[in-house]
Each structure stands twice: as structure tokens, then as C-alpha cells.
Image 1 (cartoon, rainbow, N blue to C red):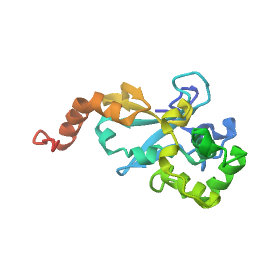
Image 2: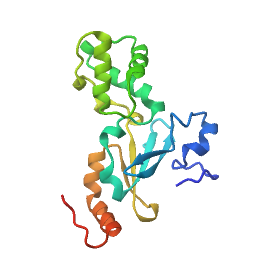
Image 3: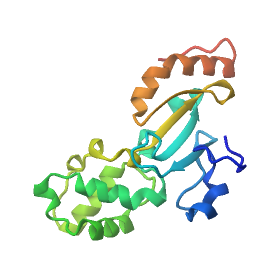
Image 4: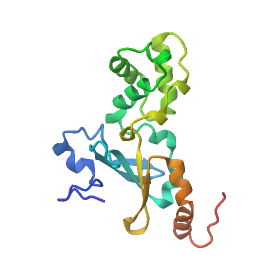
Length: 196
């Protein structure tokens, strides 16, 4: 993990590079708190690259503690683009009620409570309030979001060795369930038994 030193690796914390990138650290934090641990966030603006967007680095032993609900929010600095993409993901018969989409996204953004609850439910509620009729969360399609608007999760093992990356938390968990159990067993002693 970066120490703010000379390399420009994607794991370099944003706080060390905020001035160079011109980003507000409050909108682009360098870590995410998960289960009492401060997990590093890194950023890359490289469209087309598998590393484009926000990356959370998580030790395999904490993979089971991540909340998919929290990860869907990304970081405050990406929320407007995320809300806009969700509005644009709606079927046309819904979307036509919310134009121009960038203006509507800014209005919705002002009504959201960052990181609280389900993002789609909050966006749908704000759109419903604005429109005067119910907008069901299901019309907002997170599967259609661009890759850079979905949290990239980088799983690391002992010594920071990368075990895998994905933007799908469930897929990562299923791939690394054995490694996660081993890490928990080491952390809690040999008597650890999974409840799963």
C-alpha cells in the first residue's frame, strides 16, 4: 500500500495525491471503514482499463464483512455521475419523465443521505417525490452501470499479495471462501469453526 512515496501505483492513497489530481479528499477519501478496519481506497481515471474507477483493497479475512449496500454508493465525489447513470438506465417510458437527466440528477443528489440504506431505494424515493408518482427501485438498473461506477474490490492475502479482483462482491466471496476461512482461523486460533 502506498505511503505517498514516489511511485504512481493505483494503490497510492488519494490523500497523498489530492493536490496533484485536483480532487477534494472529502469527496474522494483514501479509506473506507469496515468492521473497525480502515481499508484503503485508490482511484484511477483510465477509461477502458479494468482498474478504472474506485478500488477498495480488502484483506481476504474481512471479505465477508463488506456490505454490498455500502459499496454501491462508491464515494461522495462519484455520486452525481452514479445517480445520472441510474436515471439513464431506466426504460424509456420512465426516463422521459426525468429530463434533462443531468439537472434531475443534481436535484436527486441534494435529497440523498450518502451511504444510508439502499442507493436505488433512495434514488427512486427522490424521483417519486419530484415526479408526484411512485417510481419503483426496480426500474433503476445497476447491472447496466459503466464499470467505473461500480466499486472494484481487490482482495489481498498475507503480505499484501493480490488474490483477485472483481466488481461483483458475491462472486469474489464464492471464489475466496476457503482463503477467508483460513485467514479467520489463523486470526482466531486453530479452534475457529465456520458457522456456515
